[in-house]
Image 1 (cartoon, rainbow, N blue to C red):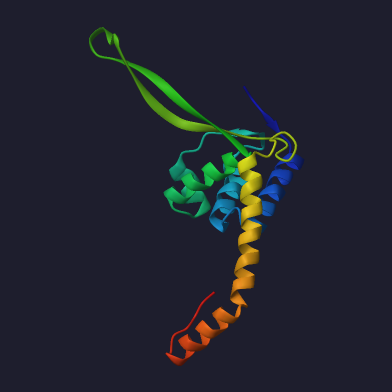
Image 2 (tube, rainbow, N blue to C red; image 1 turned 120 degrees about the vertical axis):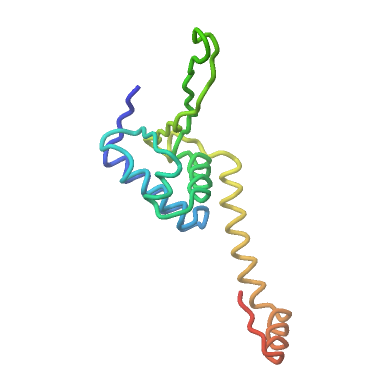
Amino acid sequence: MAHFLSPHHAKRIAAYGRGLRELRLLTPHDFAVLDTMLWALRQPGHAELEPKYADIARKAGVKRDAAISAVKKLVQFGLLTKTKQWLIVPWGRGRSNLTARQRPNLYVFTSFPLESASPSPSTEVDILVSRVERQIVRKQADSPLERALAALAARAGLTVTP
């Protein structure tokens, strides 16, 4: 089944990914994977693609494990759907035995990530938690305790990184 994805919708998906990156919910590697899948591996006009993880990693300039992690995040945020594909292979005498081999996964970009993929509670919680964590880090960096510890570290010749 062919899914159509217009350039306008592809731009909206990329903008949504940039927003997630700005909220620090996607790492630069995650965004590189999204960008690669959206613009380099996908055929124009098609929403689906079937690349191997190794191909995604090579084109995005990341390690295979980073590509796998990024795809999981993109699925979690509703930018992609992922379907495992299997090939049934007959083998043995008379081809009466069957075995399954996994084919590359099928990925389909959602046309409207903001409207059609309703935000899951976990996504909303992740956004809120990241905002609160950043506020806490800012407050802790300016506390009297942190200033005193930084002064002690400076006397001892150590550098403190936030």
